Length: 87
Image 1 (cartoon, rainbow, N blue to C red):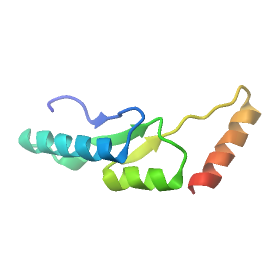
Image 2 (image 1 turned 90 degrees about the horizontal axis):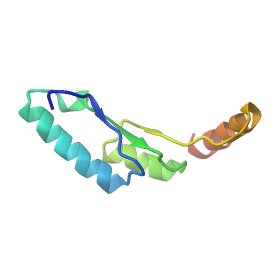
Image 3 (image 1 turned 120 degrees about the vertical axis):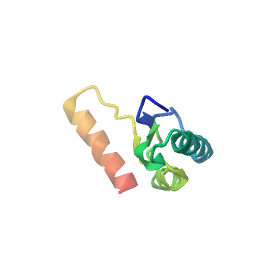
C-alpha cells in the first residue's frame, strides 16, 4: 500500500468490488492511509443502470465502459445509446 492509488478490476461484479474494497481499506488503514484515497474503477462494466448502481453501492468510485464504433459518427451514436440506458 506504499505505492498506487487505485484498483481497476476487469469485468467486475458487485461481490468482487465489495471484497476488493474491503481488502484495500484494511491495507490502507494498516499503512496509515485514508481508505477513501484509494480509487476503485470497474473496468469494462456493463452499460446497465442497475448493475452500475450495484457496483457503486459495493464500493466502486466509477466505471469504464466499452464504446464501439469504427467511425466518429458510430461512436457518437453508441455513446448516446449508453447515455440513454444509464442516465
